[in-house]
Length: 389
Image 1 (cartoon, one colour):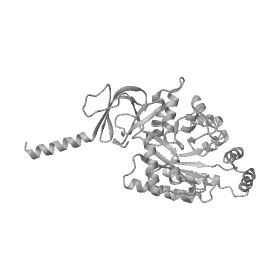
Image 2 (cartoon, one colour):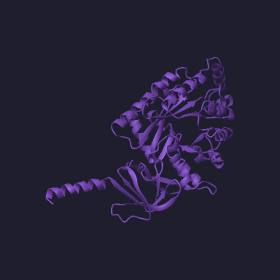
Image 3 (spheres, helix red, strand yellow):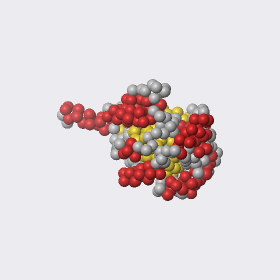
Image 4 (cartoon, helix red, strand yellow):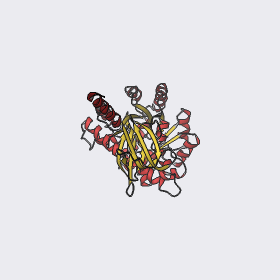
């Protein structure tokens, strides 16, 4: 073989080797078990899974650390904290998107649904921030600056009279995968409204004035919900209720054909959702803390009653992994494999991400290395086989 041919063949072999990654001496967590083993990645996919260690010189030795599938976070409003770090201080959209992405990745999340608000819900700054956040994410994606796979979850304010038009402006974005209908006004749950406003230190006079004002305005929530669901069905977008309080709220959602209850805030609502066969999404911070910071039902209590299907980060990216460790560490809790599935396989199945969510042959190599130091610490992350942390 000529010197040129030898050189070309060597370069070809180097390219082949560069697309292969071997992770060994790891506690591999699949959908059903945890075992000491080795995972081989080729061209961004999981090509082989075996027990025992590899002797390949290029293999990365985990020294007994856990190898988990990358987490899939279906609800986080964390980007808001980067675009608006303080009241009146709007940050650069691209810089905010990249900072958010780095923190999400460091939490072990390889697929994130950025939960952005359409219409008037809570913070009055949100209508102004929405296009800025989408701009930052779009620019970062265009230039290949994102480590995680960023998808979109639109949370829609039920009583905004312009809601449907605002939603349709973003309804056909290819990254949109999830829509939630939010109603935090006094007409849906008066006592909950009062409680939340008091937690915000809103003066009683202002609370009562808001209640009176709400009764004087045309209630467009039902019409908005009906029209939004029709638009979502036409686009095959999963649609969820939010902050369900009563069994009646669940029955209303079931009547509209909804199959997901996001953050049921009472045991009554969660049990009704389970009885109706709905998928229940909860927040990691509540589970880790053992309580809700606003007085809602404890997610630990929901978990003890088998009322948790998916764990999201809500507002703390690292909370999914911590919540998984918390559940798996309980004497009567799920196995580690079962707990991990709540933050990976279950969201993948629910939202049609068939190429990821578990360590299995042919799946996308979204993987995280986790060491246990009085809790889980993410050491390394691979997204579609590319090491990003």
